[in-house]
Length: 159
Ligand SMILES: [Zn+2]
Image 1 (cartoon, helix red, strand yellow):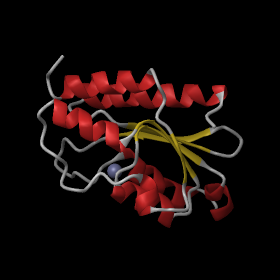
Image 2 (cartoon, helix red, strand yellow):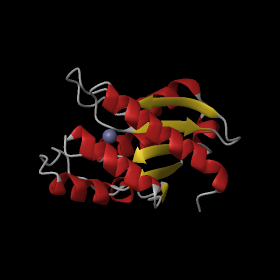
Image 3 (cartoon, protein in one colour):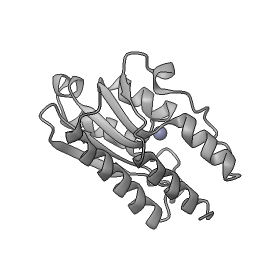
Image 4 (cartoon, protein in one colour):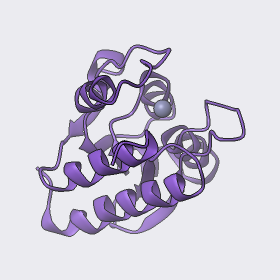
């Protein structure tokens, strides 16, 4: 269940996605929160320079591996504007992070990209649990997901 107190983290993810969009990157943002509810790190998509692996969820998994103990990672949550792609879901699981809460799902993104006439991604948009069955996953968040939809419409220049 998504607690009321978690909404600020989810809203921050949408803000980070908007920052990414403003910088010419794809609109995705993520926040890493520890068991005490403290934000430990945040990032946004940074693929505009040409490295298409620079997803925020991947960056946060690596940050967690370098800066948190295994016990801390096992109690942490990654909030994200869009459900982890298979690469990021794998990284999340490999470093032993626990929970994921997403604003919008990969299924929603797939439908939105089709509706916008955008190219399908080169990696199949599998749900997180198809890649990493042990991860606790929650989302989407009704209402906030429409804000993410709007960012994708702007990225693909259909406002
Ligand atoms: Zn990813």
